[in-house]
Amino acid sequence: MSSASSTPPWNVRRLPRADGRVFLVTGGNAGIGYFVAEQLSATGATVVLAGRNPAKAEAATAVIRERVPGARVRAVRLDLADLPSLGTAVESLEVERLDAVVHNAGVALDDPPRRETGDGHELMFGTNHLGHFALTHWLMPLLSAAPAARVVTMGSFAAKSERLDLHDLQSRRDYRPKRTYARSKLAQMYFGVELDRRLRAVGSPVTSVMVHPGGALDSLTPSRPPVHVRTTGARLSAAPAALLVQGKHAVAWPAVRAVLDPAVRGGQLWGPRAFGLRGEPRQEPMWNHLADTSVAARLWDASCDLTGVSSPEALAWLLATLFGAGALVALRRSERDRGEAWSLLGLAGLALQNVTFAGVIATRLALTSTAPHDPSATTALWLCTMRCSPSTEPFWRSPSSACPSAACAPARSGRGTAPWGCSPPHCSSVPPPSPTG
Image: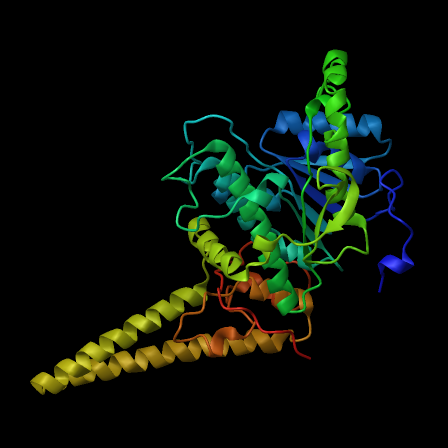
């Protein structure tokens, strides 16, 4: 196992080779994401730039090929604000595995009015957090197929001083653009923390790492026309600011290190060395508010509801509950009216409830026994699981999942990636158990 003591000191200008690996960078066509993609391309890896504007993404790939001879880089269309399109976007990757994804894309609005995505979510929260939340679930079979994949979430230094309002995640009551942006990035970081906790609970080889870029200025960023053009005047006028912040080529370093450095571990936070604003990347202590697991779990549940992810098992439990409630009403009516028909109806309801419960349990046991020692299969199944209700919590704290669709068979049998027919997760606020065995 690699450790900090067995690896050479990290050098941002001499990155380790990553030949044969595949990396996805959302928002890789501009800004920080572009420089993350450019630097990763220099390692020999295949880098996929994902952005909602195909022309800009293609322009960015052309610049990278010009600057990095032999770069293996290409672009796919990805619109994080359009949740129903994410499955198709993931299919367009056309890869068998994914070694890392950098959740970098984001929307930042400076002025009112409040805007919404086509799904009715506040634009920044819907794109920056919910879009990446849903995308991760679609990507999980590809990530699970890699030996040790990483999900790298790009937060923001601005999130350090913010707190989430779980009762107003969409900023409907009090919309202030800069605060809403910072909270959307904070939500992303909470997701990264909670994702790592859930992955570790099932012994998954996939890890989740949080990074933030510190302070960045376009005027300190080297030109990459047509992606970015810096004038001499802008460069000179920004010289004093270089004492505190840096260009976007440099603030990309924490994300690049989180992808490549074997010493990086899941659940860590990385940022610039000097006051969290500039300098080479280093591990930071986890911010106090990010360590609040109750907030992270409640946000996870809310995100499931807002993105519409669910599982067939959740529907089965709902149906069983309805059968049971109907049976109870019928039996009470039978006692009151002494009617044989009501009694038979009640017994039939109980029978249907028991059959539904038995089907769910049998499916779950079958899935668990199919590949009990395959971490990648366990990961894919855990992320398909339902939210536990108080009545089922003791039994359903198992990390195994019910995603009974036949489309999930490849993941359950340990053959690598699963087709996109596998339903994304419906999530649990109950802490998953520690891995056993």
